[in-house]
Image (cartoon, rainbow, N blue to C red; front, top):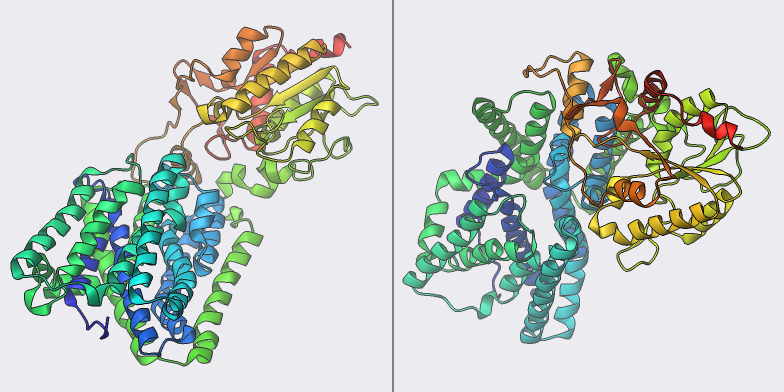
Length: 640
């Protein structure tokens, strides 16, 4: 473009459409089940506006990385940190220790623009139920943008120096096409990775960038064509918002349509005197106002919704509307008294901006994270939830000297049962073996057995395998551990059998069956622990709310869940059929009655999270097992 693009109120109108879609979706209104595509509208707008500015400044030889990042800091950081600090106040009182710890991590990752990586690695699917417990889940999109703008200005500067406009544009278009094809592929192969990480979102930002770079070459359309294009553009946004849902493959091809609609609406407003009908509609004062405060609206809306739901308040239509009023008030105030002053009034130079804005912000959030993390989320705030004190009751902390240490023979540190001169067997498995250790310890003490614990995440029996059969982790520990286990008569195994039974883990499934077959041929006695069925994070959360004594609006007090059927090819069923000599100890028998399974035993919640036990829960299950059944491990002591 030859001239810097002037202010366009219809662009703020487009921002308003994007944020309204996102808020309506997150509020849970059913008429826009695909409202999450509002984020994709933002991506295209961002790619267009930022590239327009960079491209103009490079042409005018005014571009400076310092100036560019100075603007980004002023735009992003002050109100972001303000919202974080305000939300941290109620979060410190409301969030349970594990959630407060997780919250603090999202704060620091948001500040360093890595929250999308953090959430991809540590959380479930974006649309999963436990997302309602993460106040800063939504800042994954800010991380994607900032990662893009760490790379793209450098690329654009290089292209300007080396290529003509036509070749430059061709390069960006080819990069866009590659990005779109990769997004389609990645969405089908690994949808969670595609959703959270930049590579599968790259094409969305590049759509806007391509439009910006080609702006001066694009023709001006007639009134009729602009009207038509703007209507088509709005349809391409609203139809996906109305018909996509959380089960739809996304981003990929489903994200392309709303992104295309956004580019149409940007282009149909190119000529101020001939703007499309939709552009003219959305440049009215109400839409423009919502667009102006859209960043604050985006930051505020999700934490407000999460904190309401977190307290177990019924998210009725009335509550939703009251929440929306609060969100708009908070957003207006933060826009007027934080966003605007730091963009217009407090226009420090780069050095002062770093010293006065960025460094103190980073330090403040780092201190909040450090204190919360060091104190394990302050579990003593909820005295009635002693089960959720990590240092006292989380197996990965209580047995940290044994779990994931990849050691063998360190029996003084890692043993279960009664210490004797000779080991009676070895506990093998992953994190499920680690939480089963307390259960086995109860039975082993009763049977007079001495068992060595060797649990390590990702090593159910041998190593977890990729779909092509290659090892997911180093083979050495798996091989060393199984060879060490062969020295003993008894081998105890606990693992995430449900995960092993999924189609994607077929190679691990088959490898486990084959390894068991070989151990039996070697004359080993094998004891397998079948894990509890998984509850949901929200069900567990509601039980914690009630037990903690926090006033709740729901009447539910029984948090048992339906005893769902495991698949026909569930590996434990297969083991029972193939190897009847293997002893299976089913933990579900202690806590499931009829068609339902409890999450509590003797008024103690036994789950640490949706599928792992806490230490006291595992011990209680062991004692319950002994009270109801004969201890089958006693026979092992007699047959040595």
